Length: 441
Ligand SMILES: *[C@@H]1O[C@H](CO)[C@@H](O)[C@H](O)[C@H]1NC(C)=O
Ligand SMILES: *[C@@H]1O[C@H](CO)[C@@H](O)[C@H](O)[C@H]1NC(C)=O
Ligand SMILES: *[C@@H]1O[C@H](CO)[C@@H](O)[C@H](O)[C@H]1NC(C)=O
Ligand SMILES: *[C@@H]1O[C@H](CO)[C@@H](O)[C@H](O)[C@H]1NC(C)=O
Figure 1 (tube, protein in one colour):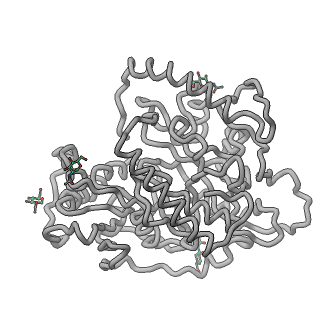
Figure 2 (cartoon, helix red, strand yellow):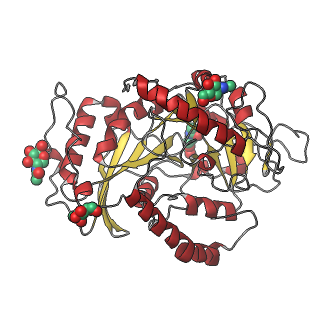
Figure 3 (cartoon, protein in one colour):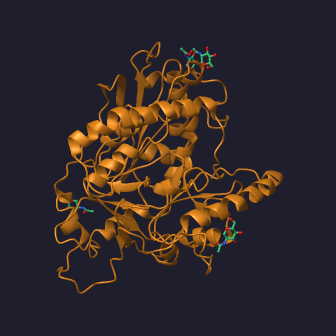
């Protein structure tokens, strides 16, 4: 695992700031959802949100309701056994103004489509080193779309060749798709056999120099990347995530075991649903926790916090987080809460396990313009999705707590993207999907 060095003075300065922001956060987010009064902090878990907000109910509170016993799979995934496992063959395809080289380098191991979950993600070559700690924990198929415009293509191939040669788990489990805009083609595409196999005693290829992407001021087509990685997954279940989010251990087997347990949804007709993994971040210098027990210990010390607490707290505010911290410390996985994306979670952008039937990501949105997952979440709200929050599973960001930094250029891109969202995309989505009370974009 890559460890980040401690920067003590930055931490001290950071913690003063952290306390101020934390106080504001408590005032804003721990107050009762519908009341106007602010509740004083109480109890040992005040860094976590409280349970019992609107649009949420506990699956355990009414076990003698009208529903017959039915497993998660029977109610929600009766087609799991009907899935077919595709062969991972290289193919090129034109997709949203980009050429995509699907399955350009494939994993050695490909499980049956009903026997695993694919972690789908995306990166440019400067982020690919994250695959190593990621696969250490995931130990299952990973589908990654790599953005490689112009001469970044060569650096991308060199980086992938290093990882495949020197990080055996990456070679075993990761399938790489490479894509580039049609107006930023690489000058040549070497045959895979011709890419030099690097020496593992040398350091990995440098990713410090300027990239083609940065020197050409290209934006990152994050949603093209997300879609490419997701549609290329060869399993029924997919976890569409970001490459710096490392999963807790033993996820895949526990998740598949969850399929034969009692369904948590109390709806009489099965609803569309996905399974949410809460996300956390840890201070730099702290080893990202791999089990819930160690995560909860760090949360109590304040060394771990909910993801993006200082950047966009409402984007990752998890329903019932306080109860979540007290549940699921064993070996199994269950659903703690079934939530909808209603107030106060109208900005929620959870990361979840779903299937390839879930809405795709809006490809007109760039990473730089922010809010890039909001359209998908809005559609899921209008389609009345249930969000089943998993108790004994989580994601933790590569160490270092993210804070808002002033960035004029990015603020301009955000303003332009917000205008595109409200003037163009929102009316389209309302036309196509209709509207539903409590759903906002
Ligand atoms: C996957 O499906 C096959 C046949 O369709 C079945 O034999 C196998 O037990 C299934 N595996 C899992 C993990 O559900
Ligand atoms: C691509 O990378 C290899 C290995 O570093 C290098 O030898 C080669 O010259 C590069 N090709 C181009 C077109 O930059
Ligand atoms: C990239 O942006 C910078 C600053 O906005 C500008 O000076 C530069 O000319 C741009 N480069 C290209 C290739 O557009
Ligand atoms: C809450 O977080 C602060 C720092 O943000 C920490 O000092 C405190 O111990 C934490 N309290 C609990 C109960 O987790």
